[in-house]
Image (cartoon, rainbow, N blue to C red; front, side, top):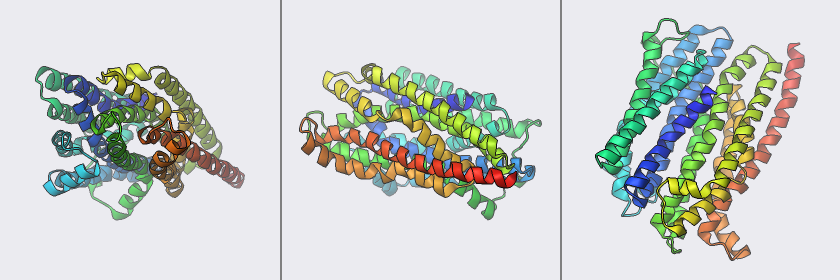
Length: 448
């Protein structure tokens, strides 16, 4: 439960920014957030690459009784975060590189200056997110899930308070929203560091000696974290492609390119928020799966996987009902006002989430392979949903669907790509899980 709530909180940052900007600035603020959204996803991807990979390694080492190795994994995660933060800062404040990123995100001339301001401020504060999100998972592995949740709640409350001050009270607009996000990250980061640096009763402590980078360990951390990275990086790539297609096909409709970006911004926020609790279930399973797999307790590994799939499927079904029933109020909540755009946004929400009840199975199952030291399988299954199926469909559907069903435009067709890709990915994942159950039965017989 703390893991699920924690991921919901983490996914709330973008929603909070969008709601405040939508009401304070209007559709142009939502469009700027849509352009910046792939960059925000990339930031989360890097944090999860380092943090989730290190956490999976630490859980396995604890299961094997190697406590010192688990502590070294924690230290190396912090060091890798510092290295990544320097790289992000250099890229974000290089005029040529940030201009290229804005071109890649399909920023229109009207949206471009707002999006650039937002991105550069987030680049400056990335280290706070990388530690606050990545190292937070170690608190859960230390047996303190409520404390891990608390560090995220602190950040969310801070972000809401600073958004209210900077965006609504002081009228700082996009710049104020970005500053509020960074300061929210700072609150979480400080709470995480306090747990590992100042407390003496924790299973793992953050020590300078453990922060010395070790190439073999870092390679393992990145390999274990690659599936989590691919989930987010795949979302970023899809966002870049969607933005490009939205500008292309939106310009051909009365909605226009900028309003199409605003509408997809709402759909993206809801989409990211809806999968966050499912990722939370997968993260919560990691230490249980990793520890028991390392201890050769195959029966408990199987039970943990199926309990996780059941929990994730229940949550995804609930989220499906909510977005289908309340699609129009959701559009209004983000500050979208005129009727044509509200109807289009509600239509996009309802279509894009048709397969949501089954997505929980796909996410938990693909992360199972990461937790049990099979990152290649996890990466492949993650890519099926995010890239291998979805990206081609984003180009194919606007061409094919209007020819088969003339009532749909190319812009409408973009939203049908997601449920089709989800179906293909879920089917592929089911085949892998069936094979894995056979393998686990053989392992159980061997260990017995």
